[in-house]
Length: 282
Image: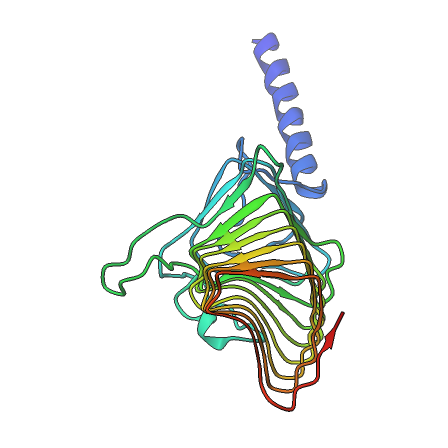
């Protein structure tokens, strides 16, 4: 009896220590193991995702928090639904009944060349006659440590939105089969380098509203517009390859892009420029 009582006492102390450690120690959670991850709502602390993740509503990475997504992670979304719609600064229609990943802190998608991160799964909506099932990744605010690399992002309304002075790097990734690949707004200045931007229905990349994206060494293929420059935007468009688009580069609305060394093949129009627009070309 004494032995049992002593061990119960030790067990009780051990449980108290475990609870104290869990409550007061900083947590980095993973999709693997017994720790839970945030699949809808606001991250309360840094998280690390791996394995298979199924998202059911808008996720917010708040200022001061970092979400890391490890190589080989597969992220899918509840199709055309969201149990947590969050107001965003641009594109109000993305708020409604679609899952979004809203980044106000930092997002690090750290795929590898032979072990990519996959975001967005195929689901055909018979009622809407579309495979587009989620909203997109939305960067808001200054997030200088954010990066998307060696990833595939598919089946979104807009795969990546950069707004509100955001500065993510999007490199060596495939952004395909979305309505729009990448959109930039509001003094954002993402670096978009070395990507395959293929088969996005409307725009490969569209730049608006005093944004300053650096777009270089990408292949932009199979969209109505490869890169669109509108509303006083100032993209730098260097050494990209454009093919099989209705228009390779569209320049209008007071925008003033800089273009260097781009290659065009098999587009209906290589470049379309609205009259009175000034451009810098070298």
